[in-house]
Image 1 (cartoon, rainbow, N blue to C red):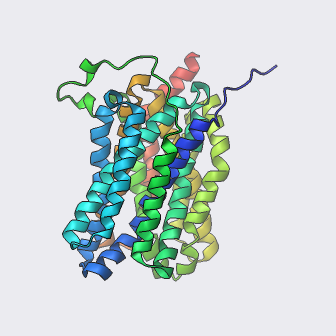
Image 2: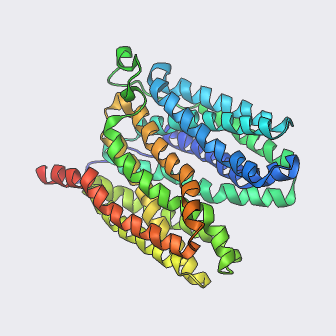
Length: 396
């Protein structure tokens, strides 16, 4: 007779996941329209338009580094309120026209507030998920962000074609207000192990970064770096191979692949361990990148999207669950912050560094190289985490 599983889909889990979804929708919605907005409204140069888009991610990184250190002393729920309140207030600044410099400042501040709010949601959700269902729970929670990566750009592009920029900013403001109101209903249980304030005094690296989360965070940094080549250059590549219309469905099939597989992979991780997910995912992600490198028809491009979703999409939630699992409960905030700092760094700085490769190679070559990087990073995973995971399973 099986024992009843502790509940996963609680009121608090659903609310925190919904808040994370709304905030991430705003992030991806604005990412796809900001460059065009800067050029149309302020006659920005191409490099300025790129900076308007990218400075947001730098803000997110700074927000995560700052709040990761202070979240336990401020309090998890209070941090969530502060983050969402500031996120919503900064959205109002988009309605003020003071030129490109002011827009850059607004984007930077908006990034900081998102870094604060999303670190709080990630920490709270890790706390309220039952320990025995952590892999499954993190998998479902990260689906809120996965859905947003498909829906956000779609809404942004649709609204930019059919309405004005003030209407788009009003929509983002509304999502911020809904998130803030919804946050009132979240119940965050007290920590079993209280935080010692002496732990976070002084200027030590461990006050900003969780050392135990660093090895798995290095893995997600490399994988996110590879995925950033898809995220940033898929539209350019689609023009090159004359598959622009199909490319609009690429992230849709990517998201669907994650949505379908996540429930199974999360449960499998809880029962069998992370290695059962990660090693096959390395192979699938590699296959997706190589298939993308020689895509010359719609079916090949979309199948590549499915494989990359099954690979990178599941690796993202799996590595996040590992980072939290390795960390004491009172340092979950720092572990969550550390994980996302490395993830955002890979996604944020990847396109800039990969731009150097594109200057002397084709997009097809770029994706083939990145596929090889993914495959060889399997060895890195084995050295940094895989062998320890295997040893702990054998010990039990």
